[in-house]
Image 1 (cartoon, rainbow, N blue to C red):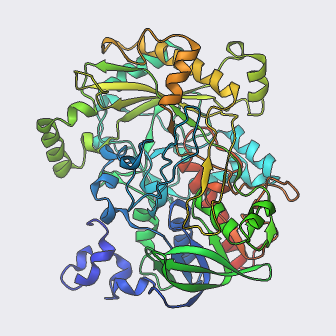
Image 2: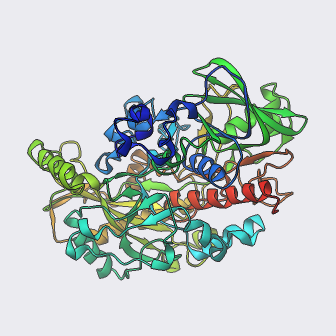
Amino acid sequence: MHILPVLCSLLVSALAEDVPPQFDDGQLTGNGFGIPGINATYDYVIVGGGTAGALAAARLTEHSNATVALVEAGGFYELSNGNVSQLPFRINDWQGSGGSSSWQPLIDWGYFTQPQNNGKKIHYAQGRTFGGSSARNLMMFNRPTKGAYKHWAEKVGDDAYTWENMLKFNTRTMKFSDNSQHRPQNATALYDTAAFSEKGGPLHLTFPGYVFPVSWDAIKAFEALGFKEIPSFTAGALQGWGWWQFSINPETGLRDSSESSFLQQSLGRPGLTTYINTMARKILFSGKKAVGVTVDNYGQQSFNLTARREVIVAAGLWSSPQLLMVSGVGPEETLKRFDIPVLSNLPGVGQGTHDSAAVHGPIWEIEGISTGGWKQPSKMKEAITEFNQHKKGPLTNGGVDVGAFEKIPLANLSKKAQEDLAQYPEDWPEVEFIMQMVDPPAGATGKNYAAMTIRMVGTVSRGNMTISSASNLDPPIIDPNWLRADTDKEVALYALRRARQLWEHIPSKIGKEIYPGASITSDEHLLDLTYDNLDPTHHGTASCSMGKAGDPSAVVDSKGRVFGIKNLRVIDSSTMPLTPPGHTMGPTYGNAEKLVQDILNAYHGLE
């Protein structure tokens, strides 16, 4: 199947074998796309065709006779960004935290934070494309711990969010393959078969078809410091080391996103109409009932999409709360400042956001080949040939194979830090270590380098966002507040020194520590470097936080329904009440599956 085959299906008669089954009857693909400028009515209008939105469109049209409009401000990343978005080897492109050169306007919103600890504004990548951030992320997949789900259930007052009750939703999304036919014999990874279902899908989950040599040394280092191997990061426990699984299609070696899986499978269904390059500008209301959305194309040709049943918001961490606020749902004081009529005073919209942080870990030159080595012209030619012929090799790997999570011993922390971290369950680690291939740092003379990258997954700092005007054409004001809390700084220092200990047990390192450099040892200097080189993990949550009725921080209930408004839901990662340990793609899919099932239950009268 070629890239975005559904857009090429006008050649039905000549290329019948390449046409998805939903077009076998000769139906033109264009029938499934909405026409700009023409008002239309559907049962459901979904705002955002990203990780949660594309899933919702697929499930609703799969399990009901409802008509669905899927509204996406961007286009198809395969066309807008080519193989930069598709090849795992290129996943770090356009993810940078710097200026205009670090983002690609056809697939990214170009959001920048308020000044952080070092005074710099940091680019916060967010997908503006079908597939959303599942088309932009590092594709690393894990699930939260059992304790994290229990904590979630307690915060929202609904046992539906316990591990046991979420398992059916977490296994529904993906079909897993160990990709053993493309893996080295000594790279067999443990995994728990109970964490997956034979009926799961359509999203693919697998191990890459290549392993970087230094990854085996990283395993030795983890074990030397007492980390035990665990059966993948998907079975409800995270403390220990394991091989990472990725949202990669093992048959093609390419990224699998919610667009390449859910959306491509559902395009052509008679109930689904997709609006491309169409931005939702405001939710429409009749009294306190959502009845549709005003949309336009590039700020022009405004028209209305009416929803008979519900408006479903899945615009992402920053855009979902922004849309709510410009529509009159949010903190009363903010809305009045911009002369926006207040429909529901919800002070929690945009407040108390939670995010993990990426800390640059120590970098060393290494003996085995890294991404930098494979980027040399002769080696890249070799990699391209292997990929084209066998769909394996370094182009199927984004530079990560193994990682580890650690719960920091209490004795290593101050009393204040112990008290702050006591809010998390006992199985919730504070730190994640990733052996990551990196390009040669500035001034480096070698070709092959690696970093023991640090992810802080038990942070206590909280951020916020708000609107800058009454129009969502103007960017939101974003402040993640990374590492503002003293406890987070303390954990970062522990993690940096722990990462250095790990490097002591890696025999393939060469010379001296490149970054931060052996002479950098004081807390002050290490923190200064951390602030200067801080990267987003893009794992933010809680900007439309789920919670109990009466909780001033809550925006939606445990079924995604916005408090004070009828027929309006939010279903994306912004609803999670906190960022669970690890990476948010897995729980975002699981949460969306659960919330869409709630919508289907209401549709079928099963509530």
